[in-house]
Length: 244
Image (tube, rainbow, N blue to C red; front, top):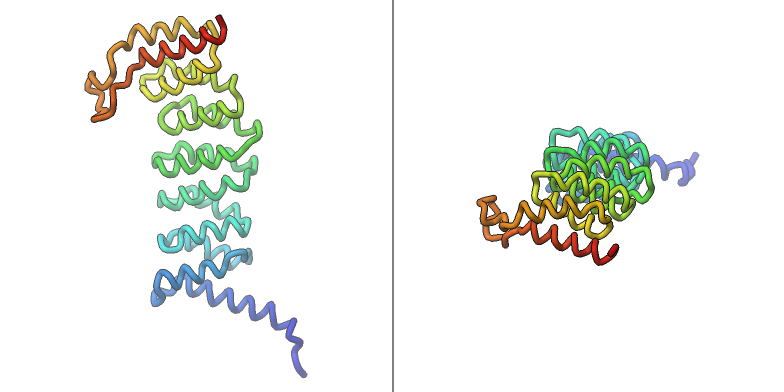
């Protein structure tokens, strides 16, 4: 009795996937061969395949491909778990992939990842948060922006695009930051959307920072002097030209 061919196709496909899973971790194969096996698993969502791809995240030769495969398979949970990896490249890859799902339940883990001590992880997580276009992301961006620093300033940029009023409020808060980039970002936004009530504080900044910071040994190297007074005066002029 012959077995119908259409009955054999799923069996053969499963066997082929198992072979490719074994190839992922076969030390006798070259990185290119193992990467090819990973690519052949793209679109597969069987539990055994997903588990293998999750393990493959820890292999530098397979990390990028495995992360892509997990995203395409809709394997959100393994990617969420990868945010806790001890390997920062794995955390960064997981953060990048999770943003594509734009699911509300991922806002919290991505917000935590945006505070990662590693800049690549933090910036990848913020990039993912920036893919959200609805109001649910605003509180998360606000909390990150208020912390200042490189990631906070990037969050403020995105917040400005989504909710100008909240961005101005955060900018006013950051105007008292000790960090020069925070002040510059804050004054740029205040100059664009602030009002006359912002003028006294801007005038204080203009009076207190007349000397370019590069002349004060702040470690800017060969960068041009950063003149906060001039930036404050530009913000003042922008507000006055709009409202007076």
